Amino acid sequence: MKNAHQTDHENIYACPMHPEVTGQKGDRCPKCGMDLKAAHQENSNEYQVQLSTFPQTIEAGIPTELIFAIKNKNQNVTLEISHEMKIHLMAVSEDLTWFRHIHPEEQADGTYVITETFPNGGKYLLFTDFKPSGAAQFVNRQTIEVEGVHRSDDQKLSPPLISEAGGYTVTLENGNDFKTNRTQSLEISVEINSRKLKEEDLQPYLGASAHIVMISEKDKEFLHIHPVSNDRFPIYSETYIEKSGTYRMWVQFNIDGQVHTADFTVDVPEGEKTEKEEMQHGHQH
Image 1 (cartoon, helix red, strand yellow):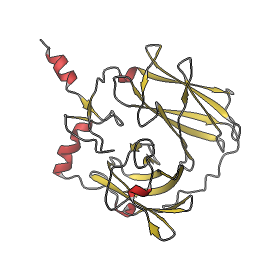
Image 2 (cartoon, one colour):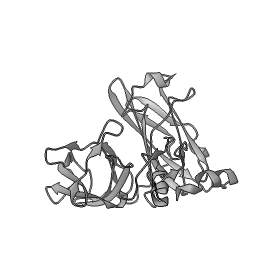
Image 3 (cartoon, helix red, strand yellow):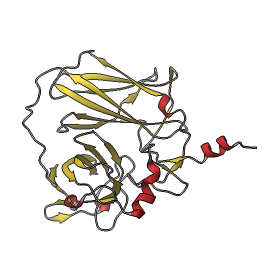
């Protein structure tokens, strides 16, 4: 017979991509739209991401090996494949002007290695996204320091809602409509030679029609979003933005085997929270 603790524990449902979002069976994640899955969360805070580099001092313009060891109680953690990869690494400069989405490769000793060249000196954020076997998706954030000449501090983020990527014009059609405290659609069109593309013109990328990351300028709030199908837009998703402010967004899509990255800067003002949204999203914390 199960005791009360076991029953409550087994009824925990969490988003595979956003483990901080929990709810009941049948609920969907407001940040990425994925169905919540049964999750054992008691060990989530025990995962450590140990990072070493070669050379030890990271210098701008010089290739650096990033070596990740995922540990739990000093033991290597077995990772499941999630969206076609075991680790998704999002590396961004602190000012959010430089972005890389890369995938460290598993080594015989259980570590994961990738080589990257950072363009300028300064601080960079590394978001390591992985799924331990039998557990919920986990995102670790680290800050590294890169030696070298820093970018000029007077370069402000412009608020473009139209981005050029590999000859394609990518438009965040509803970028002026963003607000917090409500389910927010991301409506993205892709055009080339005056022809608007449909979803079937895109090839799958990491198990979805596209890949979207949003990071806030102030707190570096991280949103990892995978689009869903929509008749009107080739790239469409829904998310829930909790904090107001300026966000940087990177949209990656695959056409003819070539991955293109469009970037946007979005201002998200505070929105009025309705009673319906309070009930729907109050369980996240």
